[in-house]
Image (tube, rainbow, N blue to C red; front, top):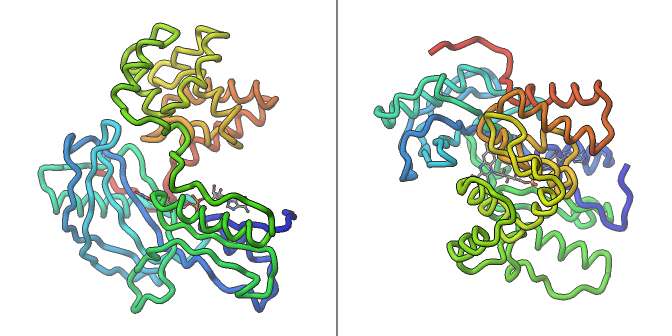
Length: 343
Ligand SMILES: Cc1cc2nc3c(=O)[nH]c(=O)nc-3n(C[C@H](O)[C@H](O)[C@H](O)COP(=O)(O)OP(=O)(O)OC[C@H]3O[C@@H](n4cnc5c(N)ncnc54)[C@H](O)[C@@H]3O)c2cc1C
């Protein structure tokens, strides 16, 4: 249960589940689901991001297949290629387990057909990015048409429910604009004094720098512990002007500057910082979202176990909870059960 003068429902594809407690009259779908899928693959084009016209088979909720022509992008990302994005209408539970092997193969086929030198096979796929995006309720026909602008729903105006706001985002890149609209509405509703919104002038956390190269050079010159150059640059890129928040960890314990396990570059300091300062709930948040340990594919088992030990110590988890958290990490990488496709 959540209580407050104003409650913001920002549960992404689950906004309708959160609204399930409203009176029947106010209960109608606000987030019509479309799937969204990208692949992280072996790097194909290291220097250029390209748009390719591809043909992609999409399954409709009724099981029928339709061949769609669309632009597929292929962008260099952290030493990999990121390819996608394909969408399809979806009716069913909000879960990570909707991608099947044939869907992955269909996207690979589309990419290979659009750009034959790619020659991507299933073994080149390290990770499947998947999730849901909101469809445009005003779309025509049964093809996917995504909502292009974030939505702020004031349930006082729409449904007579005072103090409830639903925010539906459509892009990370426009999330701050949506947040500004939501916070302005919260302030108006709460009738609290507030200064004018600073969002459009305020850099994102860690972004208070004018000249990236000069900043990197300054950090290198001041860096307090010996470390490979590539790791220093990765940390400065990741944390920006907040990178000094890691320093106390390795000043207390020099081993915190080293990777948590072989096969990963992520240090104990990064894991501890995530656990202590970045609002993590599950180990999965540390492994797949707050650090880059598993953001491009499943990390080595030893790295996950080492991160689990750090988090268990900080959160007082017993062995059972720690194992559950480790299992949760691996299940987040699994695809839906379905026919195997071997390539
Ligand atoms: C495959 C894919 C690729 C994308 N690529 C891009 C891109 O390249 N560029 C771009 O700008 N955007 C991209 N997006 C869109 C972007 O991810 C979304 O716009 C963004 O995540 C929306 O943010 P949000 O905070 O509104 O929702 P979400 O990110 O969905 O966050 C909602 C949060 O609410 C939590 N939650 C749910 N229910 C509850 C509850 N009952 N109680 C408490 N918490 C709850 C969830 O756990 C989740 O953490 C992509 C999306 C997908 C799926």
